[in-house]
Image 1 (cartoon, rainbow, N blue to C red):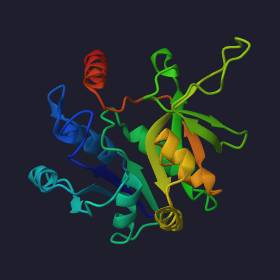
Image 2: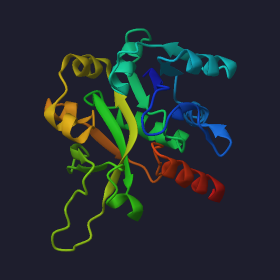
Image 3: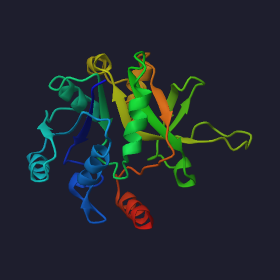
Length: 239
């Protein structure tokens, strides 16, 4: 099974300007993500997909494999799809470029969930830390008994009506796709739930494509704000 990991990396960002090149504990965010992904020995290739000449130059300076992609893409998944038209593989991984705590173990877990041929889309979850349960920036996921996602939400799901203290799970920004799933995704219009939650994976669920979810004990913190930067740096200092 040939597996290619793609790291979508736009320089334009609204909440944290130029965050891909922002230093996190002395190391640029994109470099931390790339090094974490590249540490997985099961990958055949790692590609940074960008629409920025500055990020392309940054990658060339560090001998990171990078490709220019269209500036018209509305999501990381669309950028991964463009790479899938250029680089042949059995499975494409989408590792979001704002996940500086990425570990090779995340990538290994994602590859394993994608091994069964019937799985066309996969992702990861981890037990939610207390700070993330009511945090709308931390996406929650609930799954069925077969490990398939029932729903993803920025809301706190499941709702604890009777104070039974359920185990909450946070969704992590790692995805696996087969080529036909990516081809379908870019043909479908933005779905209503996707638009409401601002979560592109809901497009698959609304169109009847199951997303299989593997659990990992390794949490991550996506970087969108200055507060996220501080939280990641505290974690790195304590590791």
